[in-house]
Length: 213
Image (cartoon, rainbow, N blue to C red):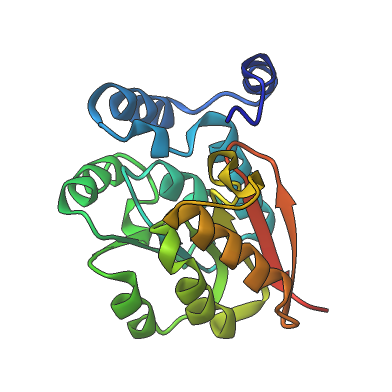
């Protein structure tokens, strides 16, 4: 299902500040070489992630699902001088590509790449998260959410990607394992009194979540 008209997407890209050269190169290489290139955050969403990061000026950022590193580079933009970004990737090939891409950024020493299962790794990271980006296996979104909500800082924010899941959550009834998992996640967050949220129709849907006032 086409959620956003292609002309509207092109218009949004036209009036969004351009990618810096490194991000443009990561974008190009991923599109040319990766069989699942559609998973890349891309220009407009990437700039949105950069905006959130620079506004929050986070000390500790967590990314669940590194892919080829594009979104982590965006999320690292606003890190404080002593800040750290921890990004977790399950697939060795993607982690290797991301590591190479990170080596080209001036935030490289602040980016820590973890290879393995996020459920195992997150509890080992002793941080209060200022910014969390969830963009991994959809069936585990609720698990990831529950792992990070208690560790959010007072200004902390969670961004969850693909919360429209290609429009499949709009179907009645919702079908498909991943679409059902995303629908369950959206409802789980909506019914959680600890947090409040807003769903943005950027790309495939981004859910912004913060602690309730």
